[in-house]
Image (tube, rainbow, N blue to C red; front, side, top):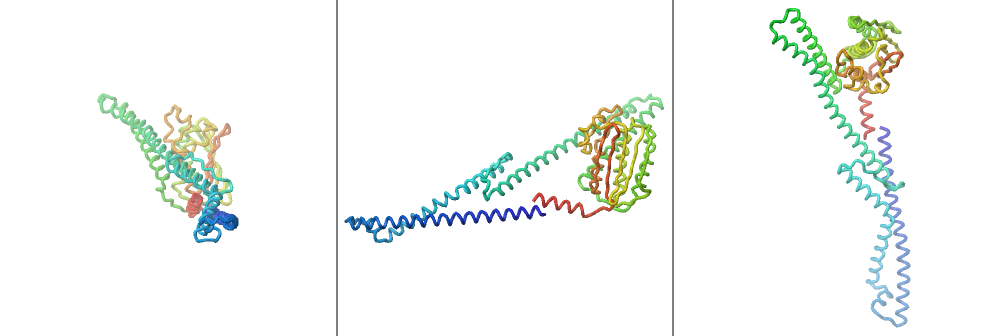
Length: 395
C-alpha cells in the first residue's frame, strides 16, 4: 500500500514538474520575444524615420515610420512567430521524449517486449519511462506465467497418461490371461486375480492423489479449522504406518518436547501432510533401517522433523523437490517400479502453505530431513491480507 502511495506521489510530482518546466519555458520565450520585439520596433521605426526625412517617401517607409495598422500587425505576427520558434526550441527535448514514448508504446502494442525506452535523465518523463518498463516486464512475466501454465497442463496430461497407463496395462494383461486361458490352475488364477487387484488399488491411489492435488492447487478445499493435539496426531499416524515400517525392515523413533500440544488446524489435511512425509521416509529410507521423528514446541509454532537415513537427495535436486510432478532420479530408476505421480511432496507444500506454515528439506550423508513448521494459532485473515498486499504491489 505504501508503494502504491509513493507511486501516486511520484506521478503527481512528475506532472507538476512538467507544468513548471512548461510555464518556465513560456516565461523565457515571452521575455526573449519582448526584448527582440522592442529591439526590432525601435530600430525599424528609427530607420524608417531616417529614410523618410532623407526624402524616401515610399508607402512602406511611411507605414513603418508612422506606425500604421499594417506595420503594427506585421510586428505582432513577427512576435508570435519569434515566440513560437523560441518555445519550440526550449521544448525540443520534451518533444523528443514524447516521441520516444510514443514509439515505444507502439512497439510494445505490436508485441515487441524487448523495447528499451530511453528519455533524458532529468526529464519529467523519467518516471513514465520507468513505469512503461515495469509494465513491459509485467507483461513478459505474465506471458511466461501463461506459458508455464500451459506447460504444466501438458505435463499433467503426460504424467497422468504415463502413471495411469502402467497399472492399467498390467490389469488388462492379467484379465486377458484369465479370460483366454480357461485351463489355468486355481492357484495361478488366484495369483493373477491378486495381482490385478493390487494394480487396481494402485490405480485408485494414483487417481485419488491427482484429484486431491487438483483440489488443493485450485482452492477447492475449504479448511475445517479446529483444535487438535498434534503430538497425538503424529504418534497415531506412525502407529498406523507400523505394518509398512515392518514390511520394509524399518524401525521408527518418535520424540516430542511435550506430551501434548494443541494447535489450530485442519486435522484431515495435516494427517495427509504427515502421512505423505512418513510414506516418503519409508520409501526412500529403506537402506537406513530407521526413521526418526522429532517434534518441538516453541512459543508460537510447532516444528516437526522427519529424518530418514537412506537415499541422499543430490543438492541440485533439493530446490525442485516440492515441485509438482518432480521425481528424483532415484525414483525414476527404482527397480521396484515408478515412485508415484510426483505429487506427494507438492501436496505437502500446498497444505503447509494453506496453514501459513513452512516446509523445507536438507539432505546429506547424515540423513535426509524434512522440516515442517506450523503456527499454533491459525490466522484466518492472514491469507486475505497477504493477497491484498500483493495486489497493491502489482498496482
